[in-house]
Image (tube, rainbow over the protein chains, first blue to last red):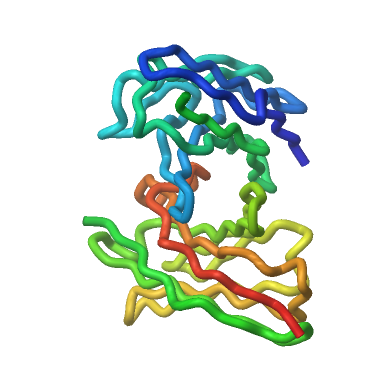
Length: 107
Length: 122
């Protein structure tokens, strides 16, 4: 199985800050990576797919980059509504696997 | 709009089975793969498998292979996930989620159902 390691596990930042979350795959997944946002008590929502493609309706302050084994989710100009847990997910091979999550808190 | 509505919370005893439903609306049910993902309390996300509602074809994560069944009823646009021989560590929120592309298994999840809490306790 492909292991997905996210870091940090949590981050606290102020409104307007830039937040960067990294995700490392245990083997090459080329561009088969997605990011999800989950708020407490709610289902996850797709933010980004194929590394950098923004799902329709997702604010442009969210961006993704990377290739192979190392990937990044960046939230520019952090907003209060971005307080959530973020998960990466590999879609290269079965079983599909997720990172452990990164909790983003607003100071 | 595309919507997945799941059945309500369940409480089961160890060794029992649970069947969770996922009713789809707003799109062609037979045109999209459906996945099941679970999340134990305070934990991360775990993919369980997918079903092709048109063909009935399925694929499961190996750890669930001998305990899970995924079916669909195209007459009522509803998919089902049944997990048997429940254990306490099966306590989790179970989500259905659609693969976003028509007739293609892209293996992303969008959108998701609201989740169904299954509690396994004696």
